[in-house]
Every structure is written in C-alpha cells, then in structure tokens.
Length: 468
View 1 (spheres, one colour):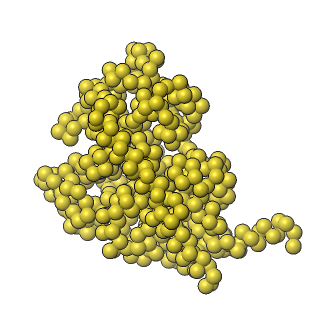
View 2: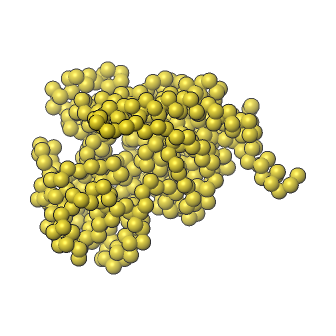
View 3: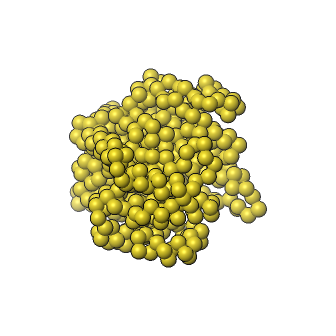
C-alpha cells in the first residue's frame, strides 16, 4: 500500500463528526474552536457552512474539511430589515434541508460515514436531516445557558410575553431576579424583530430527539442553571471555546479562531499597545453587527476623550463617518481607531485595563477568560441578559447607562471608565475577573469539567463507531 493509500485508510478509520453553523462570526468561532479540540483527540471533522471560509492559522484548523454551499441573499431595496431577515432565514432553511443530505451521503460514499451531526441550535431542521440519514444530532448553543433557559420558559408558556411589560421583575427557576430590561431584547421589545424571536423559539423544536445539548460555557460560571437544564436534557458544557494558547495551552500555536469575516489590524494594535503602561488602556468594541445611532457614537467618543485614558476603539468602516473630524483630531495622541482588531491578543495585552463591550456572548467569555473588567453597553438580543450577569451576578463590570435612562451621555461614559480604571471599585472588579479567569482555565485544563465532558462525548463517538 502506498503512502497516500495509507493516509487515506487512516483518515477513513477515524470517527467522523460533522458540524453545521449558523452563518455569523459569533456562531462560527466557537464551533471552529470546538472542532480543533475534537481533531486534537483523533476525530475527523467536517464543517458545513453557507459562508466562504479560509481556515488556515492553526495546524488543527487546516485539518478541518470544509463543505460549502451558497444561500441566495434577498434584495433589501424598498423593504424593512425585518422582512429581509425573515426571507433570508427561510432561504437558509430551504438550502440546508436540500443540500445537507447530499453532503452527508458524499462522506459515506468516500468511506468516512458521519456518526454525529453537531448543529447550531438555531437550525433545528438539521435534526430532521439526521433522522432521515440515520445519524445522531447534537444541538450546539452559542448563547448562555441562562438565555436558553429564559427562552425555554417562553416556549413552554410559563412566561407570557404578552404580559411581560406589565411586570417590574421576573422570577424563574435557577436564575437571578430579572428586571424587564434584563430580558433578551426580543422579549422586552416583542415587535422589534418577530422573525428573530420565532428563530430563537425554534431551537426547542424536536429537541427531545437530540442526543444532547452542548453549551459554550463552563459549570462554575453558570452552574445553577446548567443543573436545572440537566433535569430536562443531556447537557454538556464544553467551553469557554476560545483559542487554547489563551487558556490551557494544550493545543500548540492555537492563538486565534482561524477565521474572520473581517480583516484585523493586528500589527497596528499590538505595536501601539506595546508603548503603553500596564492597565492604562480602555479597549472598546461593540461587535460585528452593531449600528450605533449618531448621538450614541458622539457621547461615547467625547466621554472617552473626557476620561483622559488611552483607548483602542474598533469602528467598522461602515461606521467611521459617524466620528467627527474634531474628535479624531483631538483624540489622535491618546486613541487608536481601527476597523477590526485581534481581540484576544488585545485583551491579553498587559496595557489593557478594561473592556467596553456590547456583551455578545463570545466577547463576554473572552473577557472572563482573560480576567479583564468590563463596561457594559448592551444593544439587543441576548446582550441585555449577559450584561445583567456581568454587573450583578459575576460582579466583573459596571453598567455605562442605567436602566432608567433613555440615552447614554458622555458623563456616563467618563464615570464608568474612571470606576473601572481607578480606585477601590477597580480592585473589586479586577479581583472578581481574575477569579473567573482561573475558573475558565480549570474547566478547559486536563480533568476540568469542560475537558471531561469533551472526553466523555468522544468516548461515546468511539463506542458508536466500533459498534457499527
């Protein structure tokens, strides 16, 4: 047998897992990172996407087989964003239910039959494909287990969304008391994006047929709600799914996710930070989807300038026109404005003392994993609930704008920067942030809770493979 034939035989003998992600950066990142963990343990991985990807920054990333098919984008001309989103979600479901069976069958024909399909929980129709293909389906949840539990109570009608705005607070099993504005925005503003609320509810459809649910979280972060969910499904916490070199360092050279839909200004960010004192810089980023109103941008800009702190602010090219020339000129000696950044490297840099964040779940986990205190500026979807946990439950951050204020002000921004960067409040926040950093490291290290859950899942894969 030739060397090529030997390699082919070795690959075909490996247990084979397929993953399919919702086509957003925040969903792709944890799935790619989890794929690296599987590959490092001898599992063959195929990632199915509807977005063109180039994953090449890490040896285990390059071992991921990519299967890609295109989804048509609906026209947005003369239509509301809500209508365009609804049509795209329909096209996405149609494309996946049509194309995914063929991808699974192709792998089988190539001698690498798929044993499990790990699907983004927002794609429940993938479970129907699993049923027809005779393989197991595992739901991968990319928001917190707390947010998942809230949506479940709505799905079960234990929480009536038509009555929510009449309540001053909400009390649910295993969760802290939540104010109306602490709920995911699709619940506190029900009519905003009805299609996206329906999407969030859809993740429970047919879930009883799934082998189990994976959460990008760890037990000591959300232990109470994880235990409650475990009474209903097989729950596997497998996070935080961030590159290994920022946590347990067990995957050599694993320093980034290996993909980005934006090009980071990495060299510029790190070179600039190298010239700053320890804990002197505020890092500001509101994620890949934020579209801030003009007055919102203005107040953040001048609040940062008034704080007298150095800062890096990620402002996408589509948003840069909202920055006044006067602000750009006056902040040039203390601020660096970039289109995108290598966020993990920035958060890990000794010069960074705090993170002003939209509270996306990935950004939240990254800050916790690196022990960085936060200033929370939630915008929509699950970010409002994540902010509640950051400020009131984990006590690793402060709220920039109070719930009872309609608008953010530059005074709010300046005060929050000073709270997090100076004095006794900073000491408390930093101590709590470092505590969760240690917990995250423990979870992903050998024998930790998430590491053990991954090992147990792989043992099930191997057992399934040897029994067929």
